[in-house]
Amino acid sequence: MSVDARLYVSRLSGSATVPPSKSAAHRAVLCAALADGVSHITNIEYSQDIRATLGAAAQLGAKIQEEPDSLTITGRGNASGFVTVTRPVFCNESGSTLRFMIPLFSLTAQKVRFTGNGRLFDRPQAVYQMLFDRQGLRFEQAHDGITIFGRLRPGGFTLPGDVSSQFISGLLFATPLMESESTIEVLAPYESRSYVDLTIAAMQQFGIKVASRARKNGSVLYRIPAPQRYIASDFAVEGDYSQAAFLAVLGCVIGGISVTGLNPASQQGDKVILEILQRCGGKFKAVEGGYKFSRSLLRATEIDLADCPDLGPVLFTLGCFCSGETVIHNAGRLRLKESDRIEAMQTELKKMGARIEVDGDEVHITGVALHAPNAPLSGHNDHRIVMALAVAACGSGLPALISGAEAVNKSWPAFWDTLRSLGAKVEFD
Ligand SMILES: O=C(O)C1=C[C@@H](OP(=O)(O)O)[C@@H](O)[C@H](O)C1
Ligand SMILES: C=C(OP(=O)(O)O)C(=O)O
Image 1: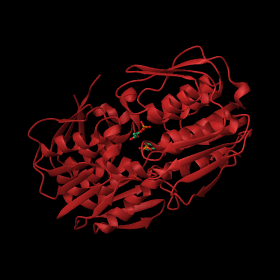
Image 2: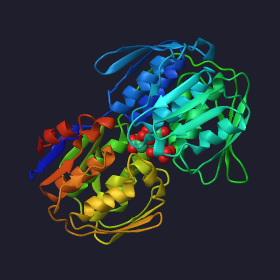
Image 3: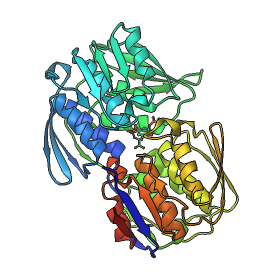
Image 4: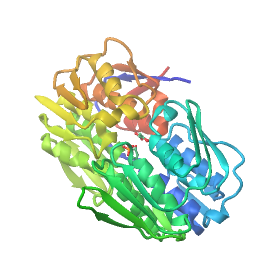
């Protein structure tokens, strides 16, 4: 059911803790599900996407015990430990879940159907289609699901680097469980690489070895010895920089906001939000477990989204608050997410008077004083659009009605409560 959020003008300030990193949590659950023995994962939030990965992990045969904010997972060891898959694997709207699970479920050698919601099956899957076709395996994609049949075999894989890093991560998770070594060559340009680094870091924490090297032709070659076994491990999920970015931008616009629960040494690619804000003149200082953001005179900068696509929506909002013309490069991938995020942000911010021009994969935003929206703002069934619009409204002190407010449940169910804790008045219709 679609819920409208009414935001009223109010002064915001205070301290808020970000949710656990969704990307890290997906990876920890998956590795634990594959491991021999019992793993404990702390700092878990049951967002819709993490629920999807937990459901799939259970279908791989993992035993999962849920506590309010932690998990105990007894994994099934290796591919021969996989149980019979009797039901479709429901991925909801989680691209990560679907693309991480396809190669793993192929190892069961059973016919497996993946289902989901929203735009999930409109998002590109051709990279896997190609891999399965090459090995003579079945991969059928329809608007309401994907069916696979057949066990992926080890070997030399070559993948494009500019469609989605999730294919590379998905194949990395599965290859150690195959019968012999594989290589994965990722062709340049290699985008969202920091997410693959997170994958390898998680795999290494669960005892898996992966080697990588750059090749002269610009590609990156991963070598994954096999067979290997995931070893149970305890994993503390760190705070999410992609989510911190919403509060960080708000903090630099209105001042007086501290964001905590963050690891300053994090490997998350979206930590680059701090550098971007610095380049815009954003003022902040390190505090215990995070950063305190002060009201800043923000000026435009050039931003490359190739390695931090999830920052896209909130960077559109940031551009509106910067004097001059913000240029966002390599924004094309934003069209392949839960919504077409370029179209969504342009349409909605224009209702508040924003000046945004799109030229192919490049976006130009000229800072202007936003006015109260002349129509309800649509969240486009996309959590990051809803949150970026809420930041635009709160940052400019304007009342707004955002439809589809429940989309935040995909990644940050407590988002509205967090805004309230900072003093925002939010009502739901
Ligand atoms: O591996 C991950 O956890 C993710 C990878 C990124 O996707 P792409 O590689 O498709 O850009 C990102 O947008 C997504 O939200 C999470
Ligand atoms: C695109 C996202 O996630 P996924 O690809 O896992 O659906 C996101 O969280 O913004």
